[in-house]
Image (cartoon, one colour):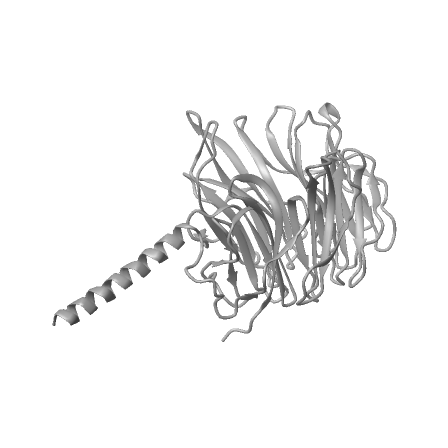
Amino acid sequence: MIAFRLDTRRAVMRRRCLLALVVLLGTLGVAPSDSPAAGGPKWGPVQFLGRNSVYAPVVRVTARGESVAVWLEYDINSHRNAVMASTASPGRRFTGHRALSAWTTGEISAPQIALDRSGTAMVVWAQTDGGVRAVIRHARARFGPTQTVSSEGVTADVALDHRGNAVVAWLSGKGSTQRVEASYRPSRHGFGAAQVLSAPAANGLFSPRAIFDVRGRALVGWTAWDAERRDTVQVATRPSGRPFGAPATLSRSRPDSIFNDLELMASPTGEVVAAWSHLAHVGMYAFASRIEVSVRRPEGSFRPATAVSESGASASGPQLGVSPAGVVTVVWGRSSADRFGEDGVPTDVRAVDRPPHGRFGRARTISGRRAADPPAVAVDASGNELVAFRASSPASTFRPGNAVEFQPPVRLALGNVTTVGVSLGGRGIGVIYGASHADNPRPDRLRVSIGTLRAAR
């Protein structure tokens, strides 16, 4: 009897310890197991990229499973930085690191990548001593020579349509001469003359974003102060074969509010979704932000903005994903309300879905606790969806194309994380993130996890 009681107590203690472990890992924002769920990604070994301090990594995976990664690299000894790139064949490791830009002491913006259906990639960035630059890489080929899109620029974005036509948008000028410009490049031709899309603003233009809709129309969006110093969200559209038209104003803030983190996404149904964070003053030295969206119907105009996040907490860093069926997913990071001089405490990653031509549902948590924003989201041609985010270590959650809910989060690797990016293509998956030493917040090495989708059991 005594032995039976001791065995029973040991079993109870084991269950309590297991429960405590689950709770502990839940507070870290990861699942208790590193093993992927059925049908989820199967991750390969972590690979280190870069020889110096790295920033702003981006990864894209083509429909054939080829991976392209770019990042900023800073040499602390020479105080110079450059845009670096590397590629990986399907199922293989990254090889052939190459500098796409010259090493310079000037400032360089975060590089951006766009892909077309054939696997052609275009990388763009802006630098203070060289303007807006672009490099093109065709599928299974090497990066081509650097091209100058504009002689000046601060930040830049790029989009490619399924035919290989490109649009590059950038922010240029200073003070009252600041403006958003764009250049259109027909497939296999050169960049056209720049077109000014915005009215001049006094240091009030931010976040130029570029996309193509399913009909081949280019859209460029940004946030700007108007004449009354109120924030606005604006989008200009370029019909095929014509220049950009006058920008449409999607939303206009109150004097004590700010718009940030603008993102644009085109749906296969012909709709276009814009999402941004709206930071507002909510009390004495207290601020909170919410995620707002505006949808443009096919052949229509953008509808009034609506909030998709809850009140009472700060939501930021919205990211958009859309399935082949046209289901739109908005994900963002949530934290406690910000106070003057300090940031809110990260709590979790939230998501909300919208069916084609429907309404957004109710937001729900798709991560564990203490998940930091901003998350990253990607959807492949089969509707499989992957969301990666920062916690005490990089983690991801997966949703198969035929599922409604996301699977429990899975830890990708150990170590501190400063940024994360994700991409899906074919049956290939890429997750890239910058890591830092525990005693040094500066990013030190670039890590990339490449995986494949497994068949559901």
